[in-house]
Image 1: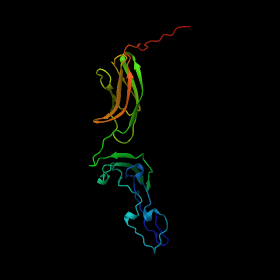
Image 2: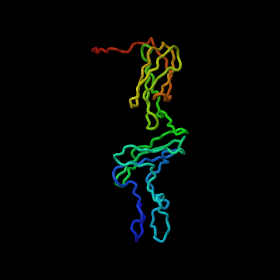
Image 3: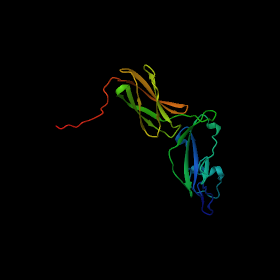
Image 4: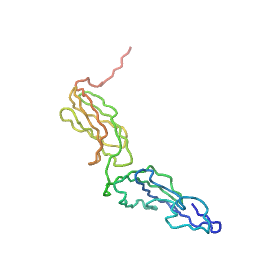
Length: 236
């Protein structure tokens, strides 16, 4: 935005993205759309001619084109930003946008949510979702659980998934599956009693942080037929 006077050329031109490669950090509270990016703020955001006999405030706060909270220039690769105490206990949304030579990228990627408690400490949560797709009854008292996990950028990423018995006889060891970044997983739970119903829960874990994803009940078959081990072709 430029303020134009017919006799004075350009009075003021705020250039927050001038120079070489850089990045800007934006912060919004409560929802992703609380973040405001490049915005003509001078004269209440209006674009029109300013005549020399008129009185307008041209202070720094009146002419900003952007509401970023921090900016850096290459080769600096890390922001340093202190979260204000008025933001404590709220959902904080952040996004980084790069810029160079007066041009700012519209977006690098989606906003990311940062949660802090009333004291400003980070709240660790696993925010992805998962569900059990199906249970397969296999020979020898084994069941195979197939499940899916949908990751999100916010919160912690799980390091593993653990399937634990919550109902049923005897002791059944938990089964852990490493989170590899993929979407589909499976786990075998062996040694279950024949014709007996068990209930299992699926939990995502990252250290002491856990999230219950789903649960399922299944009846094991320890005396069923073994799997096919060989096929022979015969002529008709």
